[in-house]
Image (cartoon, rainbow, N blue to C red; front, top):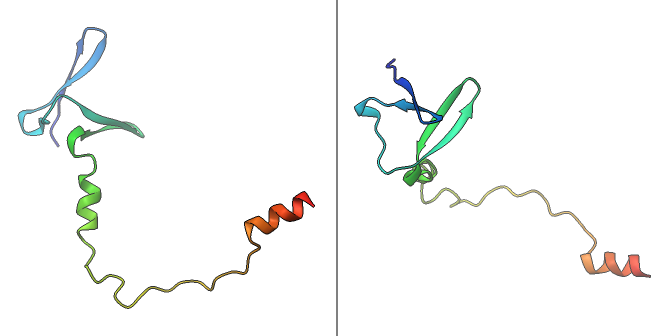
Length: 85
């Protein structure tokens, strides 16, 4: 595992990333995770979702999908009529 140097930049702590870990742009998303910090590219935050969606086949629901039996429920309007009566 590689390491990176920490240094102070004014009153802020900064990390000097090795060249192969550089990000494009001038912002990243940052998230604290237990005892670490995760940095994600700002311009591709949704890319993981898009990649995951591409894993589904176009015919994923070709045979339909199992649905639970619909429950009998009182209409919302009927509920308000009962309350106001």
